Image 1 (tube, one colour):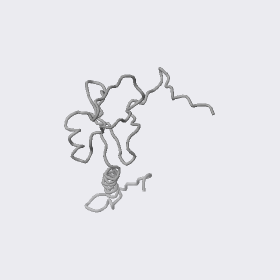
Image 2 (cartoon, rainbow, N blue to C red):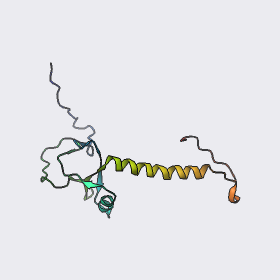
Image 3 (tube, helix red, strand yellow):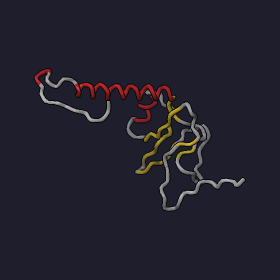
Image 4 (cartoon, rainbow, N blue to C red):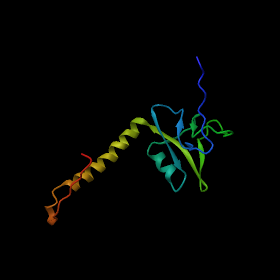
Length: 128
């Protein structure tokens, strides 16, 4: 049986600099820019730093990382970013809450526009 060659990216091709490989399957990952209070905000919402040996982006030579420290990377413009994770069940709960807000907004748009002195008609051609 012929052994498969490792993936080789072209020199002038696109690189996937912010993908995450090797993470735990029961977590959802995101790269968070360390600007304003974004990192602390997400920590309060249940996110935590990833400190395990995961690969962010394409393979690179000489990307040292101290064991047990948060996965950190430069994203340009002098901004540093951290790899953070949240339990998949919490992430899904958050997504349902976001979708509920969107659904309520759409329902308000679809509601009878003639009440409260308004007039006209709104048709939403996609969605529900």
